[in-house]
Length: 44
Image (tube, rainbow, N blue to C red):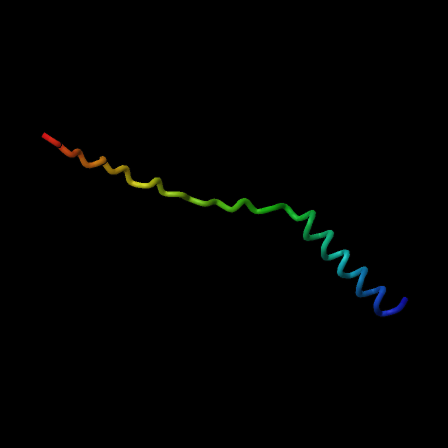
């Protein structure tokens, strides 16, 4: 087989193995925004 066919097959095999590998779950921690009380304005 030619080198280009071997290269394409190798890349296809690598892509197949990468696609079938178990995906690692990425854990993202999101801190809730601090709750601030709105200022109260006394008009009178």
